Amino acid sequence: MAHLTRFAKSPSQWTHRDLTSYNISIVTQSKEQFFHTAVLGQTDNPLLNGFMSTWLRQDAADNKAAKLLQYMELAENAGGNEIAVYNFIAKLMQKLEYDHGNRIIFFRRDIFFCVGASNAPAQAGVCIMDGNNKIVLLVHADELKDPEPQVIAEAIAAAYEANNLSPGTFGSFHHHQRRRSTITVPAITMHGTYPIFYKVTVTAQLSDAVRNGLYPSTETRVLRYVPDLPLPYNKGMHFLQNRIEILACMEAFKQFLEN
Image (cartoon, rainbow, N blue to C red; front, side, top):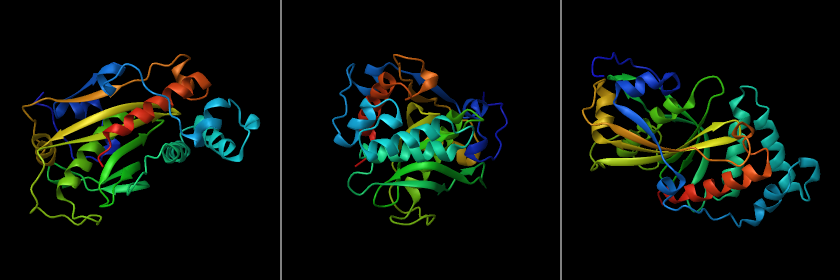
């Protein structure tokens, strides 16, 4: 696909055609392949007991569970309003301690993105950042377009930034540190309250190819896990059985965060 034209566009405009033009494929894996175990442990976080055992908000035994269920209801009925989905997933990640230690949960994070030598601004809907403001996980929701190409483009931008961002700053770049040849960025796309998980491995060759608008000779294989739910997946976390399975996936996904 080296003949495909590559346009300078922001990640929010990327489609599967852009992935093809940069020799990027998506490989769906089983639970065991993706998480390195066939059986996922259930979260034992007491903050989530009420959320995992209560179907409807009016039946919640405590205020904390009721509030999280309210965020979920808003995300379920977002109607194209991604901010409701972002608020819910951010609250859920906080309960699951994705912000453990020096990590924080951040909304609307600008990311430097260069395509074909042109600046194409990127913005992560929700991300996890470490103490040096480096992105260690991305979340993207888009009710109108397929969020998959978009989050992969954001991961490429985040990997480039991680190799060139001065510690503790936004947008201050340098090229004196030793570049890492490979950076894997964990990512999640949200479809209402249904998450799909990714491991986006960005090589120096891919990063340079995107920056220069060129076709990389080596294929990049993005690993994807689509949760297998006991009840209809388009209902996401609405049903308790689905909720328990998704929370187990989210708990296991933390292992891919850099410390």
